[in-house]
Length: 517
Image (cartoon, rainbow, N blue to C red; front, side, top):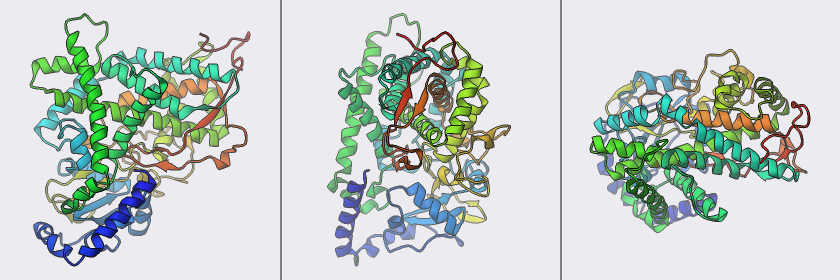
């Protein structure tokens, strides 16, 4: 939700609430009676009647919660409307939630946007914990995101990255700036669509393709947006009044039409011999051997499309932005990739395991700019103990990966972009070390992590190998806009405009030029 619509929503909320404040305590009594308050709650700020602490979450909740953690500690209690909520902001507390008490805290809260876009919880990311989730998780891990399956899509990633490099090379010959953010969204979307659907999005004009990209980003904004019904159920009608329900419905219908078309196309050519299978073919094969429905397929495809496109492109944008602000780090990374890859002309996936400094840059980017800074919220299924406090069932949990990555108890100079901190370190983002949890941990960690990270590595490696990079004339690194735009995926608010330097690559001899058509 943008700042103007957010401000309007809050003004309208106040205009409606103020006249009926005397009646609200009576209306919400039943919710208070249902919940047995634990004897001792974690610390947290004082709350207002009815809305609790909702007023303290503004445009960028992960930053607001990070600031509150500095005041109240790594485990904070908030009352968000009628929802008791715990905010986790340290590695120690994250370990308790996602490891020690993972089984008690691994379900999802029933949020409006989750339900709609997941086809009433027919997916794997937003579905409540239970037997159905176990079945969907098994399909994702065994059939869709196994190491062998991810490696089988290497040709797609390499072809699409090479095409983007050729496009940049054409622009670099004119020495003009390019919108790298837009190019990266298009790249990752094409990779995901080819892997999932067998082809990139064919929307005709560039404008229509960007409209499709915007629909994906709109879905991310809806999934991370503020719906009043999620916190004040008796006032859910306000979501309709301010237009949020309509926005969600339009977003759903646009993406649903795309899924429907792709699945129908695959069904029409079901008997055709395929050189390579995509995700839809795999799901249709699974359907023949199980009771998988079309809505369940669409729910999984939604997870892949929304989660895979924005997370990868956003991470590469943040990495390039940080490198432009730290030229010595960029030069060191370029020296590594150019030395290891040599005169081959491009970086292949088989080269990636040697690029240790590049991997450290990506870890440092994910530490400072986790794609989903609050992860996907969890909900307690039964009473348990976290940090010495008793937690009641139906308590909502937000793990603030943004705050964990900036915790001075875990990181020296946490605000500094310093990839060297990971050189020679065993710290990784795969869910075993709770200082770095951009993809979550435990049962609800992201099953598509391998697919996403290899896309990030291959793209960033080729950008650094193939070109030198400058900021547009008149822009200095100290004045770069690093503001964030909030959604379930937090991307850079302004597009990253950069100038790729053309000409023979300095590490090649004989005037050889990369990515010639």
